[in-house]
Image (cartoon, rainbow, N blue to C red; front, side, top):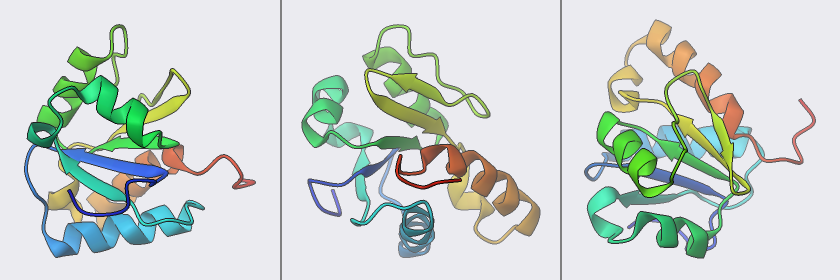
Length: 127
């Protein structure tokens, strides 16, 4: 895990992500109104994903690969999060952005990812 345990922006993936991905998501979190740095965690670090999310208590849970999406859908009954389908569940916003790491160097894919990430904005952001 990398980042503060009191993060309001939690990023889940199947494996550790590179510094370029972390920097891009840190910038996105800041642009979306999150004052704290994101917490980056892998699915394997969360033996009980549901309990882990409840303990961290973020505003947004961002799932950046298919394995993380599948793990979240399994951990939370009736979640059913998918790309282009953010879900409000138990007071959290779940946003799926599969393949985020691959979009870093692809401008068209980056625009799509940014559109998806906008659903993870902090609730005090007026837009």
